[in-house]
Amino acid sequence: MRDSFDRDGISRIARKVLVQLVQRQPQSISHLAHEHECSPDLILAAVDALRSSGCILEQQRDNVLVRQSHWTWWRGVLEDISSERGTTLGRHVLSYESTSSTNDVCRQAAGQMGRPNSETLVVLADHQSAGRGRHGHRWEARGGQSLLLSVLFPTDQRLSAQAVTLGAAIACARSVERFACQPVHLKWPNDVIVAGRKVAGILVETIPAGPIKRAKPRQAHPAVILGIGINVTQTADDFPAELRSKAGSIGLASGEMVDRLALAVELLDEIQHCCMPGLSPEQIALEWKSRCHLVNRMVRLTHHGVELEGRVVDLDPSVGLVIADAYGRTHFADAGATNLVES
Image 1 (tube, helix red, strand yellow):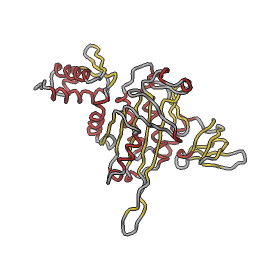
Image 2: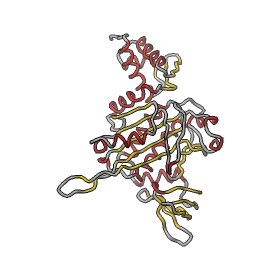
Image 3: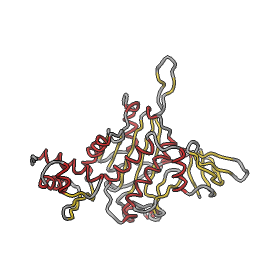
Image 4: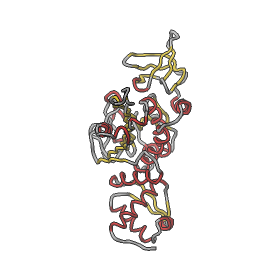
């Protein structure tokens, strides 16, 4: 074994240690030393380097775990994990300490030649100055409190906005549940609920593609942008008075400090599984029904701006909610154009 205690060597080991810790915690100093073929002293130096950079780590005897990963490590760690796992999602990451909106960054990236046709891009922000939800609603949070993430799915993924919305909601619910340690429910079409409070929201947008120039021109499939905002570390005092009975966070639900980077790793893994190409329609319908509890309930909603009232008789991922009104007529309310008023 040969140790390298120069600054670059310690930084490289620190990044490798963080990659391991955010995927599986806690781990022992001796195990990490064995994994990286170095001495425990070098691992301890790497842990000190992580602390010096702003990470919050806890040591219990020989074990070490991460309570909070500093923002500066996120991009490299996510790309390293994607490389190790051989996954598409996370291979290309952009991270910003502050930006207007991660969805806006994806839209700008899609305008670059070639990107929307061939690459899946992940964009992260520590803070958004103009974050938004559906129907133009603002998504507000101070820096360091939320996981703010968008994914640009390129045209060759051939994903529909409806499929991404439903699959991403399931991915988000599964990820939040592991950290909140409480059951997670879904409110149609894109709200993630823990203990009766909204902790996450989803915004899916599409970018129309131009015609493909071939002997017989045809329209290319649009690129899809998936935006997710998850409240992670907020306390009740962080929400406006009018939202305190409705809004929550993973930290409030679990009573524990939650590492946003570890949550990002989990979320990207679930998005890869649920959206690329994704769960089958049968799997989506089954899990949605188990988490949403809308089937056989009376609802009032707006669909394409028109108010609709009736009983939900089914959820069909290809068309959305299947609703029977008082006159026996059947209506289909897709996720992209539906706003639930009451249930």
